[in-house]
Length: 609
Image 1 (cartoon, rainbow, N blue to C red):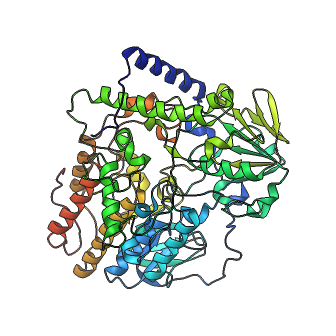
Image 2: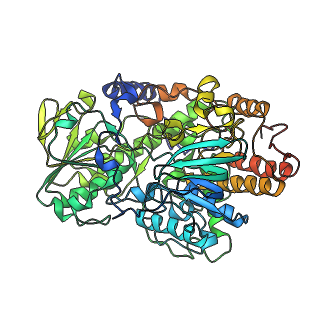
């Protein structure tokens, strides 16, 4: 695993002192309730039930027809599955999406300043196929949303799509060998195959602050930005906040983008921070097609694969993206499974030295850009690089030099103490605000299926989550499970992982579409045998990296269950995304003909690599 260069090796005394500082700062922030400190949003806050971007939901009669494939989720996962299915010649593909259009997280999240923190030329999928070349190195959210629409239009996904519709249940009809798909609009239509892609950023969360119901000011979550109240657009100009006292809770990836925008338009902005983000250089810039090589066929696929290789710890002859993700890629080893570190002598010592160098650079940047010493101290991150998702901004730190911005550090009280009718209490001080914005993110990794909101009933009336509760998740390659024929799940479980998740989703979409096309050709059912599931779970378990100790020492956040830890286990393919994608390609080449049987899809054996 290549590591970032450490220009000067820290002494053992420096390492010991830094470890102790990290421990002290962690203990200031850990809460005994862990993830229970957050609360349900939809049940208690009405604005999550409404769609601010669709003026009126079109009334229609419930559907009772039949389609070839139903896709649950209209984000990039669902869109890519639909596009790949259409390229395979599948006739009727129906996407079910609770939003009013395609886009998924980019449909719901339209807060001021929203951009993707992965380079647009590798994040936006199907650039080669659509002929689109992003103008900026890091695309704004609206450009990303429009690209989602562009792909859906090009592959005719609007024809059968159901918007403003949530799937409520999936039930296997054994006699007909079809899935019955129920929705909140009364639909009960049938599909021969179902693909679920309900996302990892689809369940917003709010902090369970005592007294939150008592607050009489205006509130909203960043994933449901209220432009009717603030005015303006994602580019700013929020004249509704002129002269108002505004508070924002949350300083993670969303907060880092939205806080500079609020600082420009609010009368006074209070930023309530429990843990500072590690904010590295963004380096936003316009890029010409020639600069990204868009004058060559296949340029986007080449660039995307290059980024994946580097961020997966693989060797690459050239760094095409050359940003702070790739510069610090070696430190992602504690987040992304990788086999490269196994057997390497003194790996942890080299890793810690590189971590030390990178975090010192990030801390030095805070001191250089924030003029007030006390504010700079509170904004300084004291934890290891992979403890929290890295963030990147050229405007966040300077925002705290403004006279109308106050940083309220809540670490000593382990977060906000309580809310009152007029504002927020921290350290016995009440901060009166007329509007409070929650930039508190999502329940990462929670989907409709895993949360129980979308029950899946397979053969013999067995529920998917009931089987997983007994023995843990059982899959082949993360896609399919015994007892649930023709059901293909997209997601990171027992699959690959990467910081560029749209690349992962596209590889999953390719595989899912190939399964469906081959099954249609043979008149077969897609379903792994139990022993095949066992073999795949063993593959994932045997190579699972030992990261539990690292995350147990980290500051609390969603990576480690808010301080509860991150146990080792067969949650993802352990040898990296590049190796996993190679495995899937070989599997398709070797098994598409032979493994299809009259009524079953089964894998005779599973190779580790």
